[in-house]
Image (cartoon, rainbow, N blue to C red; front, side, top):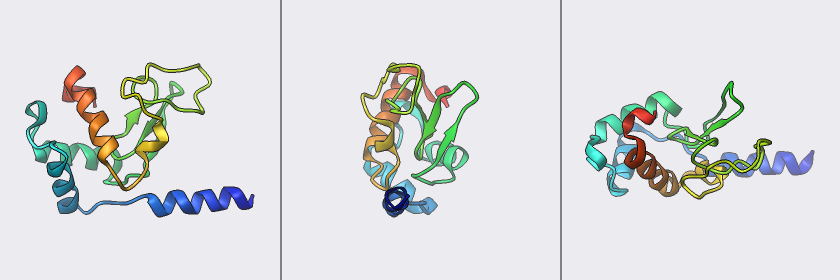
Length: 124
């Protein structure tokens, strides 16, 4: 139990709920402004809707997959979820899902770029 509480504290310490302007600056620095024709404002609105700007957001879906991080990236197709009992998913971003749950959003941005490049903004 002590280990679980310790890990929970660590995960919470690495999480961040962005303010809207800080998020916009971070996304712009990550090259998201206009990426694949998606405006910076659309990315900010998408993230607000998906995760309320919370890097630690994690939601279980009815189909057994889980959405992770600020972009709510799905474990069925885009990241490896060690809790996934269906075997290794497609892992299109070649990343462990837990890496999408911290305050450094660079890996989340890189994965979102892969997703939007392959499926467009309608993937969300």
